[in-house]
Image 1 (cartoon, each protein chain N blue to C red):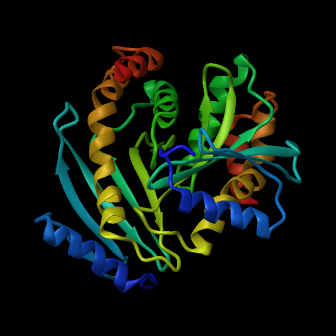
Image 2: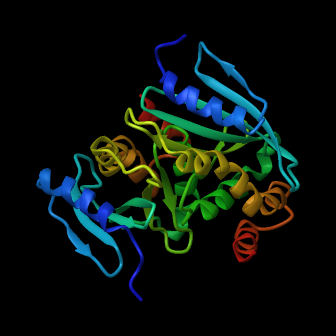
Length: 155
Length: 156
């Protein structure tokens, strides 16, 4: 069954992507926009998914690397520490398979998003992954404790 | 008054509180609103703190009870499990003292948010504490595993 979502939201976000020459695909059955971005850090890239609903949309920035079972608790601690330093959005970790992503929800009920709001929502993943990405990798590979890795980000 | 935050946003939120007869304090220097709310679960209540910026505001709901050091790792796992898949807001913890909070930020970009957006952001703490609070309370005491507690909360 096709998902119920706002075509106007789809139009606003795809319009923003068009005007910024961002390559993306749309799934009008599921109400999704998908894109991939490169990063200036060791993570190299991430996948962006915009999940549209009637009154809000959720931006997910999913990493190409996941947390192995052996380091999942350390990854969870690192992400809880990182979330304290984030303004908009937060990291999430799926404890079942180790998937790591950033999530940010924009509530648009009776309040269509401005271009500035759309811009922030689509670019915050980039900013956070460049800030925390290398430190996260060091935790995932067992090179640093979550506490030390977060302290290094602050420096 | 500080010029570090939007007076319009503060006015919108304080008017909402006034209209609902909620008691609160507002620190004009810091741009911080504080209120106390009761909740019908094991935690009994929480402190809501709203911080204002020029373009955004953030609603924090802090539990009054902190996590003992010996249970912090379990609580991290519980909060991580709870956060995965939430639509609005997220749980967080200060690992230096075990303080737990729920956070919801709204980017307004010089526009005034609708009443619906404001209400959702203010109600998130209440909703998530009702959904997950008793399960979290059990994990904070070592009475349930994070996985079982989270799973039970999400089945309710």
